[in-house]
Image (cartoon, one colour):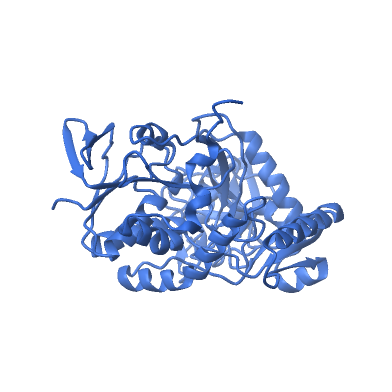
Length: 103
Length: 372
């Protein structure tokens, strides 16, 4: 099935296929690719919404300088998705709006 | 334009004085240094603070009180003139106490200071953990927090916006500012002063030296000895968070933009503005003991600045006796004292003599007796 995303995987990851969870939903990925690349392939290809206007932002520079791809990874907030390789079972949560101080 | 008065130093002290002078229709020229200088005004934490100040120096507490009482109207005026918001809030401020012993000690210290003042009602109180928690409903306090002292007159502001507003205010009132203007030498000529800036010279009937740590060398040339040493302070800043800390604390405040500033250290290692991992660890450790959930928040910046420290830590306001018309103004609490500098100090400098209330801050208090 063709998805609605601009991006799709060119090859079958085969043995290096892993499953990660984006906002709790299981998603196929390839070991070693970046969290940002996986996010871009999703039908909702964005990574966070902005603190004030809450408009969506997607990974942009893919090299660690623009900070558009900040997500929560395995419980740790404001992590740069483009600099983080996926691992089996990883939990990725999109940041929605302004960050709050959680207890 | 031939200036009536040249202010040497475009930090928060010099800019406040220049702004106050420009508002009093003096023809002011402000000489600012460059980014190679130690710019304390760019490293400031941003407290406008009274509680705990002036131990052993009642005049300093009085000075601070006076400035804080002027801060609100100063803010209103400069915001109206320049359109720059200073993010000044004066809803009180906290000094956290870790452990019962620290709580008792803080209480005693503030009581001693109150007795030293010897008049007026206390404008601070000790809050136990429960009372503190009521004041900070969105904060889960660490288990070691015994309470805090609460100073009613304390507050905070954005120090960079303050500096920028002062500069804008000077220009608005017809003053001039020159950046990258390094005064190498001052020569008294009759009752005037000739300033040497590279190949250029300027002449002015009055000068104010407010050049921070660069001041002693200049002050010596107009007959004033100002002993100073740099006190390094390091500050950490977090990513922006939804407002959770409604009041500033000494060493922990949430800015109008949402970042949390964490400070500050103090050490004397000379003219060195490098940051250290040791300080970052110490500040982080202390902060997580106060508010454990901050451990999950990202730090985005860490910097060091050099405080302008006199031997007793209190300001220096002097006019040269050998060369009247030349003033020296130095302090490390330029944000708190900004309103006083704009009003009282600029008024006095414009009038040509410093008032009795500033006499405790003359540099002669550091003179070493000739015969010991």
